[in-house]
Length: 348
Image (tube, rainbow, N blue to C red; front, top):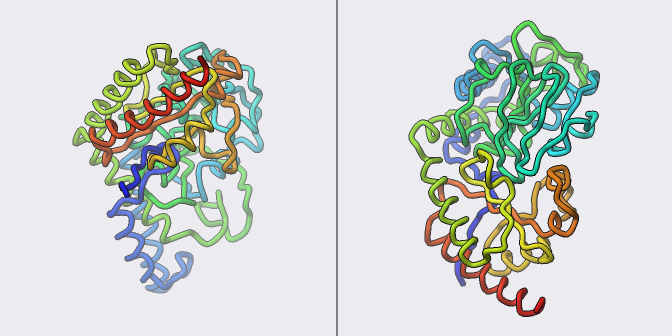
């Protein structure tokens, strides 16, 4: 039996060895980070080291970092008391709080009129499309861009940014709100006043340690050109797709995209069906965002870009990472082409 091949890095990246090591070491810190004795100070030092690692990796030296349970909680911290504009391509954790009055074009590029009153993601999780962030954007979701493409909070001109550990090879269940110094927010979780009063509750020392180590390793990979190699695999994949199925629609093809993300459709061939077929063949891919409670739905992102329900429900996303190989791409394309041939024969 052939080993399984993981091609769903935008849903979650495999845990990095650096993150695993940092988490195992942090498990030996017995103190509460709010305690003033030596054991408490040791636990607190782990958190502050991780905070510095995330700051350095994200170019956020002049900013504050508040650790949370994930980007969803970080978004709620900002948006629960703020009415903002957004487009339909934003992640659910943004859209549920927003007035979806901004428009995206066929390539997924959003037209922003009032940056200080809007949320605009840096990169889309489904299509990989990168946005040009106008100066002064209130909030930006950097969850997918962080670690895959050069970015720096101090240069971005945004007030708040969201990060998630497991997208860069850290543990699940840890994220961060990045905010300009001098900007404060009303806490959603009140209590002991941890994280400078922004998010009460004893900190997840182990998870935060893993986040810091993963962020540091991700920044190193980016500087070493690892994602340039992923981009070559991405381009090879899309060239093969077009060769096999010239009628394919590749979403965001004419826009700048993440180096690893291909979202494409053969209208009428259900994305859900393709995901199951590829799963049986040993390849883990998706039909869009993983944040829908395991349900496969018509992509709201693709609908917002102007595609009809048939096309939007036919999309699949292949998101690659540094451990993928050309042989794995060839194997995937062989399996996908076999299924495509059967679909075409039935449709004829």
